[in-house]
Image (cartoon, rainbow, N blue to C red; front, side):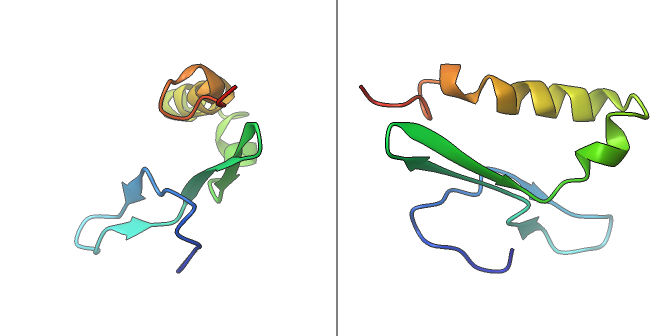
Length: 74
């Protein structure tokens, strides 16, 4: 993403060597009593190949509701 509503947070930035940092590959926002997550990363490619970082990243997304910073407010 190049731009997004201020309600969203972009907690990561990525870049290749020599490239400027880019945000927007992962966006997170509280929505109602939950959390909305947008990701542009290709998990469908990396998970079948057994890429360890992809599994760690995906596990963190699944457990996001346990993180006090993003947990739904009751």
